Image (cartoon, rainbow over the protein chains, first blue to last red):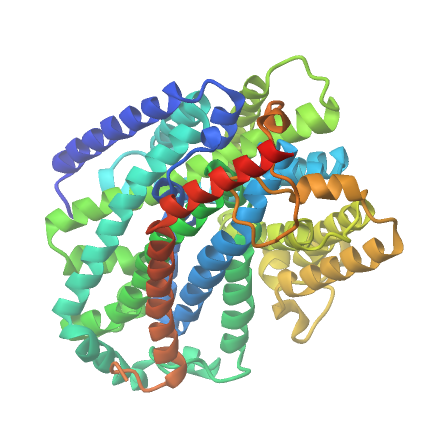
Length: 552
Length: 52
């Protein structure tokens, strides 16, 4: 990119010093298992919210989805609304407090362990750990590739070297300092991301004639939409695609449901609910979380769409034409030509932060899933001699290596789908039993096991054999059955989440009702309140004494 | 509205801003006075535990 490389390298070095300082602060407080796995359960609400948001929003969400908005328009803003409403408000206010309390009552330190202990099943913990350990490296690999490509173009360094350096820097503080280091670094990175996006929005509106002026100019450009997009339902950048058109279906099913609701059941995010000290901290965290997501996803989509106005005024072409049809190049092209050089450099750090914070959270979640949940609890049945921190470190090293290998060997077409695949799988496999664990006391161990297996298997089956976006690049269906997808018509367009998730919910309900309820005493333990809890459940349980938590 | 003709889009735009503002108000209300309420609740619960 067209910025002074030496100045940028200097800024990056200062940035890295700040990160290692913060990581060290976290490390010094992370010597206990709770500290390493759950950041000591006393994290400040603002740090939790920034860490949650920064882990959630990766560089590809800003660059990639910004570019998609430049092509498809502002209809994507519904996704932002879903992210704020479900991903922050519902997550922090409804899911968060119950997850935190139950996690503490059961002594769980990871998301799979939370599910396993809630259903008194090592199988659930081990299977969930394995699922995360196998499929999250795909998602992590895609984030690593994005970050390495970004470093390659901005700093002008070799791609392989960039991939290696980026991974080593993050691995070093995640391995050493655990979740507290990750969260401190996330909060710093989240702040940089927030500032970067705020400047980007303000500059864009000022440059294009104010909020209404810029939107009106984009509205007036509707006749310039390329015919290929018009044919599939595009009606302008400030209009929704035609109802029922292929574009409308793509937007609604994949983006809104997949990414919008999928966030509720992501292990690396859900585990953060267990890092704060009380329910009120989670409610306070909403203050930071809501505006943060608005400033990330919302600004990326608005600026992405408005880049069409800028390019049309300066070059006479729409954004997609300027970028030669590659949506990933639209945001970098816009930043370089429209923004002042100093801002471009600052924004680079924001983007680097977005990639690092997402990778850090993934590394930690994968390591705990493989080392603690799958190996220590699933395989060794809790009889492993090593400490949890030790097993997790080995798990992390293994999964980081796997992510890097995948980033090298898998074709780009698969990597591009990895995020959606992982989020879809998480939703189908975990959302039904996670919701059941929190809100439905009648759900049984058998119901949860059946739902977990059916949700994961049906989701994987649908994306391998039916959903064209994954089935075609994977090529497994073609190799076995000699055709790209098993079903035809509109079926290959329907996202796995819309098939597998309802099925998993149904199985959870039917099997639970057909089997014996879980012991009343155990449920009382799960749902019991402590002095610091909000008592909206009014269960009438006596508050816990410290002796109850001594084992945690 | 806001230079956008399609209600489905300006509604999305406004909903995003309002939901973020709503989050800020909700968080602030829980921040303010939270400490006080919590101290009272904790001491009440502690008293309840001691009574048993």
